Amino acid sequence: MPLLARMVGTPLAIHVGAGAVAGLASLLADQRISSGGHVAVAVGPGQGERIAATLREKLVNAEICVVEGGSLQAATALAGRLREGFYDALVGIGGGRTLDVAKHAASVSGLPMVAVATNLAHDGIASPVSSLEDAGRKASYGVQMPIAVVVDLDYVRASPPAMRRSGIGDVVSNLSAVADWELAQRQRGEGLDGLSVALARTAAAAVMHRDDGIDDDAFLTTLAEALVLSGLAMAAAGSSRPCSGAEHEIVHAVDHLFPGTANHGELVSVASLFACSLRDDDGELARDIDSCLARHALPRLPSDLGLSEEQFAQAVAHAPGTRPDRYTVLEHLALDENRVRSSIRAYVAAFDR
Image 1 (cartoon, rainbow, N blue to C red):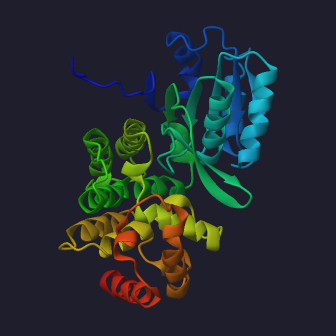
Image 2 (image 1 turned 90 degrees about the vertical axis):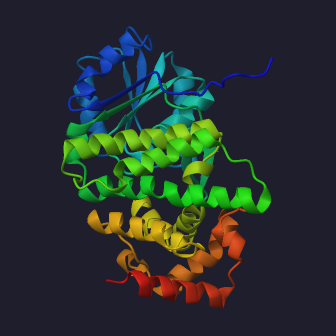
């Protein structure tokens, strides 16, 4: 008998809204994650510690673990601490680096993990991937998807505007990643998963043409849900393929060559616009992305990031080496140094305002 359906792992609960953190203890009990609140709580700097303080009254049996940085070493240290105790689950509270550390530590410790996001900077909220630094370089690790995702809009609104905008750039870049996956299917016969593509495109389309922005709860709710959808797209695909193409190769290259340039969403905004400018089409996708980035005051050109065209050219040339197993428009065109520079000049001329 043929397989008539497939199972896709998803969180048991997704709660987006104001006051979501206050209901965390009830969520843990209602979803049978931890009826008595015997959990470890990993917090990062900033709002994470403040949230943990508010939780102590309702999660009296919880143990607070402070996480410093977003490194593989931090995740390993947290996993070691988890093995020393007895917990029903790990609750990660904070931004992307804290959640990535918590996801990895929970996976290697065999514990379910609850993600409590304090900002909407990128699509790692519900993804089965942790991006961690190791020996000065970032690497991606497959992890178990969070069993529950909580986004409290009160804390998101209090996060810096740049962090809220960042998530827009990351989710919109799905369109560039999907275009690369379709290119790999045409050129190399690579398998393309329709469900993953549908989820990734739906996430991007949800925010692409909205007129409201990061100061509006309706927009922030949609952005949070779109970032969760991106995570589900990666889970369905079993890889980051539907949300990571040439644009993320460029981001990894910038992070390596020019660390500290900008946050992830700002980098991927510029990289996705450049990647789409290389495509052999009528330029409609690039124009749509450009309009969205401009509307939300996101970087669009290397100069917006403080990078010269020469520095950006170095990153583009280095980019394919960051993911040698991934076929994108960069691998397809196989640009030499002169063509990289001429392509960047053409892109800057087309989108400089």
